Length: 327
Image (cartoon, rainbow, N blue to C red; front, side, top):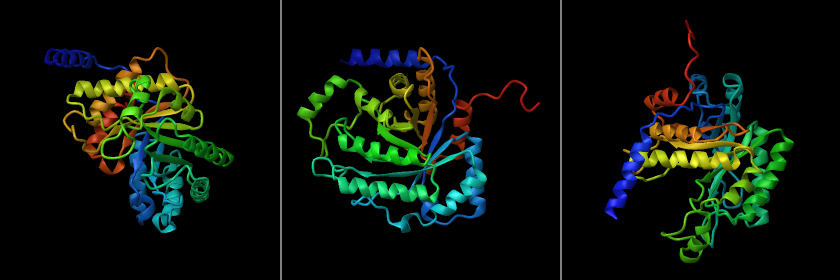
């Protein structure tokens, strides 16, 4: 067993040494803190935030505006400054889409907060979405967790939400956990491991479920982080594998955003922003052809990203300046 583990580690290390060729693309997102809608900000703060978005070529910001209450509402006091935010974004970052990031812990097997199986709750969620669109948000970004691949109620909500957003000329995006490694193992997990409690099987989308979500969403953001692998090479392989597999699976159907971390994970020495970005690039390199739809990365999160990490992001991910630029 130790010999096999050593071979895996050595093979991953050798694979990791190759410098990726792919660079950043035309779609990049940022998960932003709730305070942007819940607290007042000065004009200078709005300008500085807009400058950060432009400097890092962010096209979409998921502004945390919830979470939903159990009944599907969000108290207006939680987003009392949302209109000021939207006004500032229109003025200082007109090319960036501001999406309302809304979610909650989904009730599964009797545990959780919001019961999406209840049609009345889904209707109130839609009414709340409409309120945020009325404020001027460019889209709705759902993050309900956990979402298992048999969740028909969630897909029904997505169908109704898409009708709403498209009628307004806005976007529907959704954050999902990283897909399964082996779809065929899901029935075994379901039979042996409960879906609730301290030990439960993870809510990973299968290939079929991910396609169904992609057919309903304008953007799908994969929460690729929380890897907890022991080395940078294995962590980079994780990001590369999921990038390639996801883009091959749904990259022709919807815009794909691969989530990359700047928070401090458990395996902080291995799961870093540079490792994640390099892994995503390796995954793009492995594609036989580029997807038909835009794709990129989403930085999680705005409130944990340090100036030095933004500098590394620009250096590792964004396209290199054209030869002679600025001369």
